[in-house]
Amino acid sequence: MKWILLGGHPEEIARGAVFQLPARWPYEETVEFMLAELPPGADDRMGLIVTSGYKAGLWVVSLPDEAYPAGRPWALSASWLRGNRTAKVYAETDVGKILVCANYSPSQQHR
Image (cartoon, rainbow, N blue to C red; front, side, top):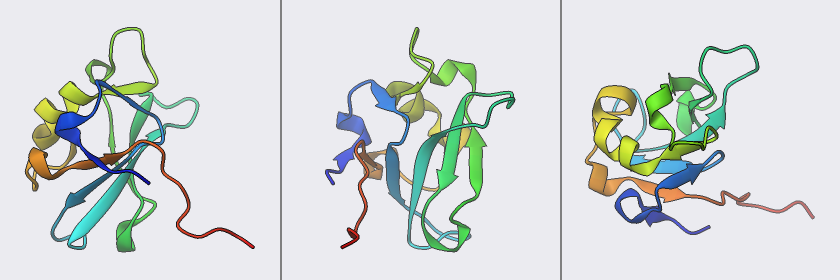
């Protein structure tokens, strides 16, 4: 897996990308969120789900229409996230410390 800082990430962040950032209560010291498609029939298209720690599996936020690049409804705008993470996503960390992994892979392989 290759982690890059959000500030250096290309504009489009694809579904399935994972964000890793320093956190605090109610999360652990580090938390990971995955950009996931919402179920059919949901009011919004995508959101963030916690993938680490004891809050794993919980939805954090559904993303508004302005979070997507024009013509790309299944990608998140990196510039939107940098500008709106405090009000819409997670305000407790510096945007300069958010890491993104676009190709999240299993940590162990079945043998």
